Length: 468
Image (tube, rainbow, N blue to C red; front, top):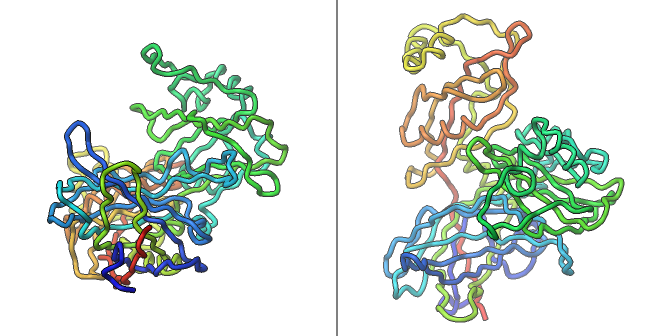
């Protein structure tokens, strides 16, 4: 291929040229369009990666985090937001021939100069959720009609710290009318069950109809990616969100939402609900670098095709393991009782919190140690440059309370203070089965060393074919 004719030259870790569908290769159509902030006049570009083909069908959702980008005039570009994995459109089934409708993986770059013609370079990390890599990333609720009106029992959801309850019209009305804790009114603060006083005409009244299924979700760590419904034979059931999605994202209600699925028919007796969850094994992280990405001309037509690329999912899986941004070297987390000089050092960290300092001084004997139920990766700090493969260790100590939640996290030792905040933010989202003293749940101190590893891997050059 003549590089002069190529519409884009890409270099991505773990990627291959996507000339034709290949087993284990996720193909993406790259498209983009110019945009402008009407309030400030700032110019930007929206980029979409739309998966297709057998490999692309394995990817449930994705997102892109940009660490560096500049246009051909040298102007530095900024990604103002990072899209979340969960979108209400993921997994939607409509009446088109293509029964599944999925959102493309999108990101935006802002700060384009007036005369920019292409993005000179953009680097960052692509993250993909591939459910078939981890059985624990899929929770199947069998015989759903018999379980309407109450929280469903699922080991996979419980391990992820997620509570899900499903309702039809009758059971939702009965549960909301009873106003029992954990009922629909605790999840929906919109016009359906919760107190809502919108300006006249601003919100239309929304009610459940016969044939609708509502799903109440308590997902504080934002790990539930999609919910789908299937017939007993595994074929997808048709439904439509129709915009009926309510979020109780008010103070005191983090992670709670209430979603209505318009079925238009009674669920079959053996219908099942399938929940997809973000887990460590199902989440692939692929560093990428793109050179000479064209910027579409402004004008009618909006989004324009820019080229194609392919990502080897096997290569991405290998790279994710090699580039894992931390390793839990201690294995299973265990309660930690300091001794000697270490005791005085740790005690000094909680001197501003007498409750924890007094607890640390007690000589408790645990009959059962806390057990880790779910954890998340700390993010590798953006803008921190280390030699490829270099390691940084951060020791964190924290308290697991009687309900298995983490509190009072403190850094004990750190090889590089730039990594401290990331380690602390992540560990506060961990969940445990609490430790016990004499058969009763009890607070315990836990210590975990995190090892951050700088990304490694040599990029592979890709040439995207000319569009049009």
